[in-house]
Length: 607
Image (cartoon, rainbow, N blue to C red; front, side, top):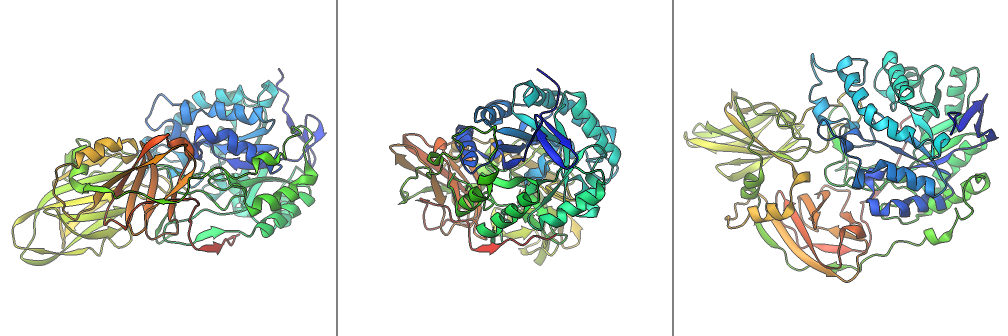
């Protein structure tokens, strides 16, 4: 083995083992794809003509609790990397420690960001309180990657330093520290940074002596000229993320991009000598509670469960029109090192799907008693405890306090609600508070007696991009009755992503309906598992499990109308659907043969 890098640069030329080379890559996130489908999805993007795959590494996926990172099963990163190599493709790693990726908390663990804030740990800086934790994480992660570098017989040919740092900060010593941390732990293949195609972003994120790449979705010539002007000595032009599609937020339209428009821009990029990575080549799913959120300065924008992203290989593996348009663009640039079957049409056939059906009537049970029964012991304190204080990364928190309501109408409000609460007084629902308007409150009627005030607070995804990264969840301020602060709270966590749905269902038995949401359950039989899509027509908002797997969140505000159920989640015979509905039941539960991601709107790049 040698430590000589596989990819080298000579002026503006990129070389692979000394020969001129062009990276034709695409993002496939192992953490968004069922591990039984990794090979299938990789083979499909290779059939499009790609010679390379890139992926992020979400720290919080591997180490949700401090100590003892998990690299097994669905988290077996090394197995995924080896599959890339088995298919003859190169691999680009993007290990962070911050990844964005529309992933909850940008991939940073909640136990770490719980320490951030006023006077606390400074995220993504040279603050030793931050870099000491990154160093400990890298001590585990990076040697695994180093052993799989191409110059050691693996497929990894390049590693990214941090991620779009110029969109966040300008601590250049921190960026240099990250690069050094990678080198010190054995990375000797090509290093690169990636930032948006503006002077502001490149100023903050690029490093001397490290290849500077750009992220964009159009106007490749402008991006190339910007990068070239900043590196007068010349270096290869690399688009580390070409946005051929886009992700979706709840309550907004489904973003798409015309296939021929995307292919035309990629063609222009290649014609001027660039290398490219499609973001995404295959998007996958934000299974469970892993979806992040953005914030536009005035409101939270939670990301939907699907991460289809209008990618050329769709969420269920279907080759779309964009797949074929891009395959035509890539064909003249075929890599010598790629196996001869890379364009094998066998990988273009769509996956098998179950036929459409309406599921049998669902049994129902009241929700709130079940949540009370499965919640953790919680904590008692004068003020409500946040998710972070309870050690909860995602799910729900049940808040309960006893307070006296004056005779007549009062207003119950929350100063600092992150993100959404259903409110009950003596077990009777009185309304919903949303993050942006919780300070306006809900009108409640009192008799002068004490009442039990309960809030079920849901986190809608942690911010993954920008200055609100690491923001805390739950009730982060005070609950008021009119102008009086309510004290004496019991705060109990409900980690939905760790719950056994059978236990949740059993906990709701024998309780009387109370109108504060419901649990629903039904079964369906399949002879042979295949892909399907779960639809919940008329249901308002909640979460759905198939067998013991939490698919994710559904919400009537759209745009997403179905939840993808990959075949490996099903078994031959009977399968169970469990629904946690926060408001009202719909007209039934259905399996549909295709996705319904909402009314489409053409994505427009902001740069």
